[in-house]
Length: 401
Image 1 (cartoon, helix red, strand yellow):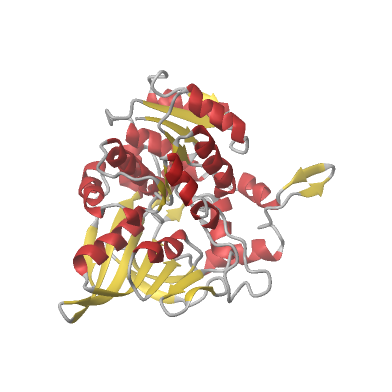
Image 2 (cartoon, rainbow, N blue to C red):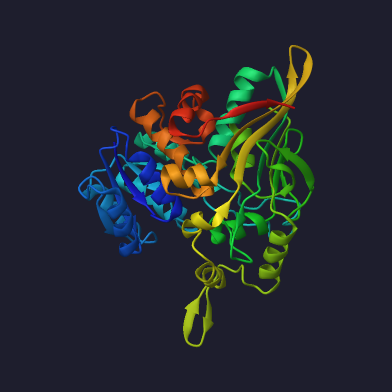
């Protein structure tokens, strides 16, 4: 397999490091707007022929097409902020290349009732073009990170093997990670974090369809395993709620994230000052987006690994019935930061995200997973994926609740 990896930040670097020992990865092109960053990662990996480093502007559709054709890649792997998703998705279509991302095209809130009704939903742009992709004979695999991605695969597994009827599929994400030396240091892209946390969260119910609530709604305390303990989780906009109902039968789908009061306070402050705005404004003759300024001021999540301690847990909580009896399970994966730094040279949050697209690539290369069109992870057999997780260093567990 030959892959054009667009974006060599924290997750991009981790994807490359996890893919390096895999013989089926013939070439992984390291493409980034910051050529020095791409070369830095290339130096760590060695073998510049197998890991060529190139400069690319993720907003330049024609340049992406040209680069994909130059290296004759099989896949375009999107590892940049989701503001570039439409461009990369369309470039893959133009180049007749398969496409994978870890977050779908962005939403636009309902103009009149943003906290009640959906406007343009996550992934609507991509799913609207599914027939064209199918006709062209290429595949776009959407949301193939940890959440979305692994969490969706767990949902499919629960529906196929653990339940006769499913009431709720609820993704729950929590951690006890601490970043030493910083008052505020998000462990994932702040651009993406702001987008997810300040947009109206989406919930799906069988009788109601998709609807929205105010940010940080419906707080609940969820008991996370492996020593993390109880964490208050709140509704956050996330792809699983838009993907799961397309493929799986259930009555309700939710996504809740353990942000913490302090983190929520910082996000509310950014919103109150307009610093979450992604539209450019003019400042002393220069046009700049306030959100980009915030991202530039905060530490790069990829650089925080040696300052972090603790664990992060991602999983899918499912309730329903089996053999006429009520059942609740939590299928999850816990990543310890110390272990991730030792094994992969990446902090826990980005490493836990990065291994999922690499497993997906392996399954697609082996034609264990096959398809054309536009699909989420739920469209594929979960068992081959879950069997490989331990071998990649990220074993899953199932906990009866």
